[in-house]
Amino acid sequence: METSSLNIKTSDNWALFKHTERPLLLAGPCSAESEEQVLATASRLQKIGINVFRAGLWKPRTRPNCFEGVGEKGLKWLVKVQRLQGMKVGTEVANSHHVEECLKAGIDFLWIGARTTANPFAVQEIAESLRGTDIPVLVKNPINPDIELWLGALERLNLVGISRLGAIHRGFSAYNNLKYRNMPQWQIPIELKRRIKTLPLFCDPSHIGGKREYIQEIAQKSMDLGFDGLMIESHTSPEQALSDARQQVTPETLEQIIEHLVIRTTQAQADDMVIEDLRERIDYLDNTIMETLVSRMKVIEEIGQYKKSKNLSIFQPERWEKILTHVTEEARKNNLPQELVERIFKAIHQASIDRQTEIMNE
Figure 1 (cartoon, rainbow, N blue to C red):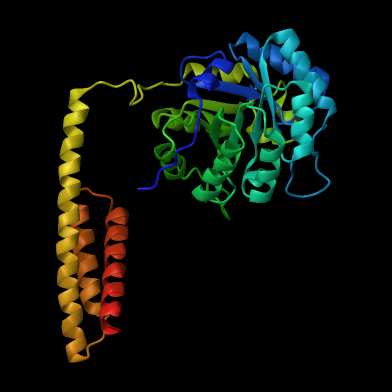
Figure 2 (figure 1 turned 90 degrees about the horizontal axis):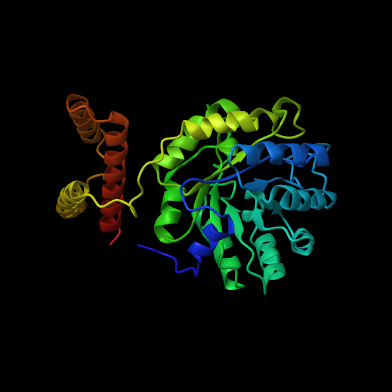
């Protein structure tokens, strides 16, 4: 299975943020709107124990004539947060000019947004402007569910010498979402973590949910999955925010969210022989499944050869209907998710058709 060998200084990431326990918390307004708003939000966040402050200065909006951030003048406000509150500060960058201004101002960390991650040219431009530095950079997933784009952005940064890297899961855009603003598709960040085991992984429940009432459940889910930290949007007056008002919370509400989080032991901390025994049993069953699939495909090849010799059509609707009815009924009897079983057997059936088609054309 594919893995990635990025050179990542994990310990340096945590040391920068002065934090040694999960979750590492990054919070602040979606957009820096005024000096007063930035300083007031930072002050209230520090009182609840937040040491890392985030605020957007350049806001890439989907449509024109929306608030697109205060730009460079907001850097002075972030520097004041550094000086007055002693907090680490960061903002989103989308091009080399943003990077240059942030480095000049002494910003502590940067992040690359979803729209930018989706554009390799933009990521490469940012990477080149960071060459010779090693400022921490967090990379949000691209707006579309493409793990290779996400991984590619991290690799481009690593290749110019950025070793203090992290990833932010903010969900994926989809047409007509039923609940959340962006679909979580948790399997994608999990796969990214599998490929880069030392990569700090953050969750952005604000952007996944799109509404403040979903932040708690999404944040808890990410903790259950072993994420390292959270980036949550917080504003002194969320209802009056100039961008993403519905998904921001007050610092006091954020404190309640944090207090209700259940932080579970990660695999790195776990030393449980019971789990190891159960995993050995799962491995045995997985091997049994693989052996069964191999045997099944051999029978499929025999069927394909027979159909070819008798000039029979590959697809037999009545037979497929019988199989599907049987397996879904068995799933129901055994209290298995019928949708899951149906998906599995449809995939197996498609593979069987593909193999028989190959035999027919040999």
